[in-house]
Image (spheres, rainbow, N blue to C red):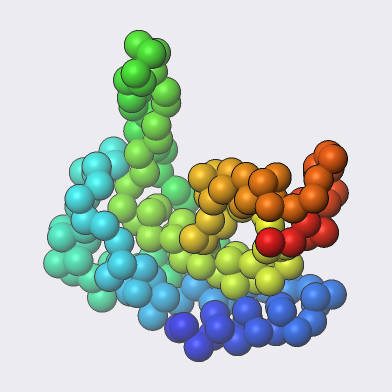
Length: 165
């Protein structure tokens, strides 16, 4: 499956105006098996109580059923379990816990979407991207302020990459 996603990534990079009208066919048994292999089995179980080991015990049949329901467009995600996680300040924040099957589909969709859209983002865009995050954005901004000649920094300078390191 990596070669399919690599090809989509290459097409998206080489043809920025290309429109992908169908990507559902990329979520196949091979991609879902790879997502299963890469999935962390230590996460909390969803409302169905199925763990990675339980799902993997009958993996081929489970993946066949999942792929078939995706192909027929009859796949329906299960409701998430909502848990309140305590914070340091005494408040709580909500956390949704999905069932294992839904996590597999979400991971597969994430990989396909990254292959399609990742080449279109500026390198300076950090939010919710692979190997990037808030701390990296703050470090980059700090270097820009300290090392570059600046009277002010506009958002457009940051997005266009006018301030280079």
